[in-house]
Image 1 (cartoon, one colour):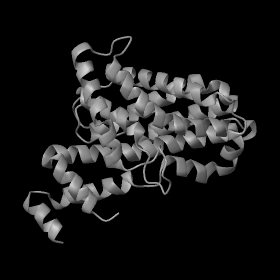
Image 2 (tube, one colour):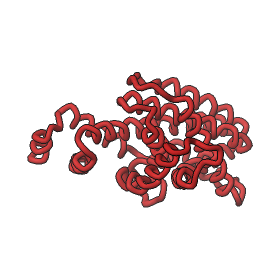
Image 3 (cartoon, one colour):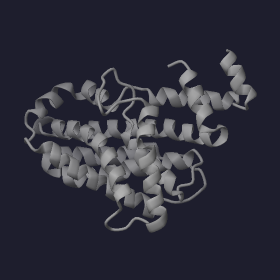
Image 4 (cartoon, one colour):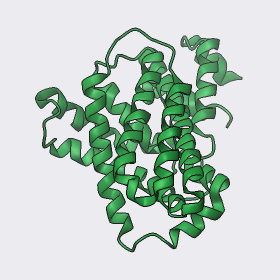
Length: 270
C-alpha cells in the first residue's frame, strides 16, 4: 500500500497503474514453447525424431533471412503517427491460412512460409505499437517491434527461449541502440551492417528455437496441416500479447521514466 501511495504521489495514476498490471500479466503468461507443447505435445515429440541431423543450422539460416526480410518490410511499408485499433483477428486469420497450407506440404515449405508469416507477425506487432501511441517512423520503435520476437513469456524451465522480460530487454539494449545508430546513419543497406546483423542473430537464435518445434510438428504428414494452422495461431496470439504488454510498458516509460516503471512493475504481484 505504501508503495502505491508513493507511486501516486509521483504522478502514477490509477489508470496507468492498472495498465501496467495488465501488461505484466501479459508478459508473464505461459511461454510459447510451453503452449505449443500443451497443444501438440505428441506430434512435436514424434516429429523431432524425423528432423534431419543438420536441421538446426538450416533453421537458423532461414530464421535470420526471415527476420531481415521482415524488418525491411516493416521499415519500408509501415508508417503513420495516428493510433489506430490493431487488427489482431485479421492477422491471426492470415497466418492460420498460410500455416495450414504449408503444414500440408511438410518441411519443404518452411523456407517460403516462414518469411511470409514472420512479416505478418511483425506487421501485427507494429500495428499494436501504433495503437499504443508509438510513432512507427522512429527507428527505435521499429527495432523494438523486432525485439518482441525475443520475448518468450513466463516458464518453469530455465531455458534460453523463455527468461524474464527485463532480462531479455537488458540483454538486447546495446544491440538495439547500435542497430538504431547504424540505420539512422546509413539506412537499411543491402548488406545490412555489423550492428544490425548482430541484433538479428541474437533475436534469431531465440526465435529459431521456437521454429524448430513448429518444424517438428510439420514433419508428421498426417497432422501437418492441422499443426501448421494451430501453431501459427499460437505464434500470432503469443506475440500479440507480448507486443501489447511491451508497448504499454514503453508508453509508460516515456511518461514516468524507465526506472520508476520497472520498480513498479516488479513490486506488483504476479
